[in-house]
Image (cartoon, rainbow over all chains, first blue to last red):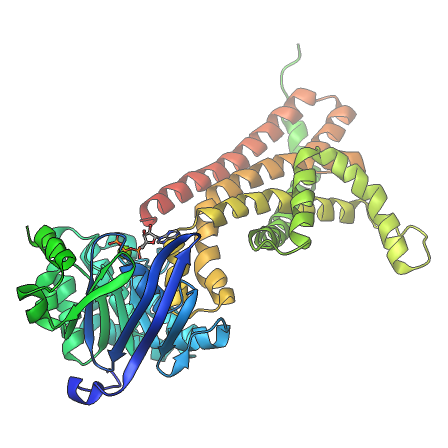
Length: 256
Length: 229
Ligand SMILES: Nc1ncnc2c1ncn2[C@@H]1O[C@H](COP(=O)(O)OP(=O)(O)OP(=O)(O)O)[C@@H](O)[C@H]1O
Ligand SMILES: [Mg+2]
């Protein structure tokens, strides 16, 4: 199903995402200041940090939903400049899952999954349908394929959103707080889906405060504050012995 | 006062029927032309196309501020002159009352629909656009497959309400000496002196058609209230 099987060992050497000296401003406000990040193929990164630290902005720059003002972003060998060809070339390979799902409310679940493969990857309706059903089965929601998003629970909608992104067969998946808008009892089903994806070898960058999830699947935890990366470590080290004061404060707040 | 005699209506029915057909045809054509053109006008404004966007804005404002009856007059006299200039020899090219009616109603409706659609476009959640970007959909596919279908669904009750008004306004074609349902009834009423019967019967016809359409509006509202998250 997923085309690449790069394990962590092999993957380490070839970064699939490179972010160098990234600067992003909103007017006079600098949301990202000199951010450097490299993601190896198959690597799973958890991004965390206080509200407003720039986590969303960073992953939105990676698929150019936000335009950066300085530095370089290279995804799968293509540098993101302003050129639309490059941007859509990159976006094809980068899946994104949003906090608020952003499913298309006028399309059924399966149609949500079929649209982009047909329009962008030029799959036939039958091929797109087959792929969509396959991935909906993988996120265990194929029995709802003909319902509309409005008829599903939040957790089900988010799993559909994951399947929709996977239908493009992306090389990287970006998650922006995928469980923050969910009722507590639905968080697990979405995290389980993501963990399964991680085990399949998908390259993932997840903004999440689910520390249990981070411990279980992250290769690296990246901690951001005030528009900069403050600390990076493997989850074990990060949670046990955070180096910076700010990370300690942050962990103190979310773990209580 | 003499008693009502509806047999007269029965005799006159073929003529009334042709008037009704004209009203319906005019409404249908104006609806289709108005919707297609109105969508284009809304998009031109939405994308803030240089120059054209401003022109469209002005056109819509103008159409919405003058009465339809005046627009009908204008087009009846203006369009032939414009066509004359375009054809080169400068002599007015008469297009006839029927064409005038169809063109005017279409263009007039387009202005109203475009305003409804423009507002609808602004109301679409930002996340919908971002989801399209993330899926690498082109701008064209984004609007055609995701944004416009949602806007048209949400706006469909208002669009249909506007169309009911349009249907009633078709009676204005009397200024072009065309005969719609109301026109047919008035002519017959003058001829046979049965004003009350005539106007009663066509009032019922208008009522029936408009309330059937209103039923549709209500059910559309209900349907999209459920489907819309
Ligand atoms: N479109 C925008 N216009 C202006 N300022 C923005 C915009 N988007 C984000 N910002 C600002 O940039 C900063 C970083 O925002 P960002 O959404 O990346 O934070 P975050 O780390 O994802 O926070 P949260 O945990 O609340 O989601 C914030 O101060 C925010 O107010
Ligand atoms: Mg955020």
